[in-house]
View 1 (tube, one colour):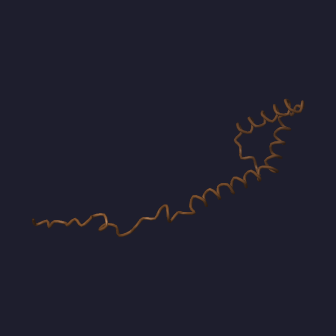
View 2 (tube, rainbow, N blue to C red):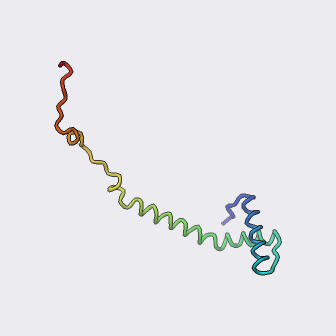
View 3 (cartoon, rainbow, N blue to C red):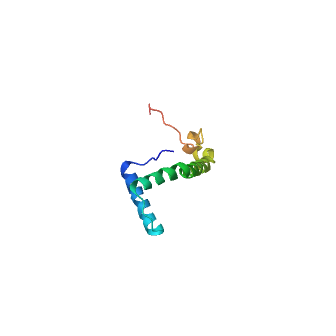
Length: 93
């Protein structure tokens, strides 16, 4: 999976990774190392997140369309039911 990030987004993520390693592991990553780490994580872990997102979207749409006929059904032939016996007058009168 290629990184789907813009150049600016990638730079922001690399900066965040470098800071995280410095603050949590007392280790300094170069920009190149952080970039390679990002590529590795996206290739190895990214598909899990992507697949989960697809599964969540599928569940959502299935739930929303489960009762589609009940939600969207329109009763046909209702003109006379809603008119309540009114009679149309002739145009000649």
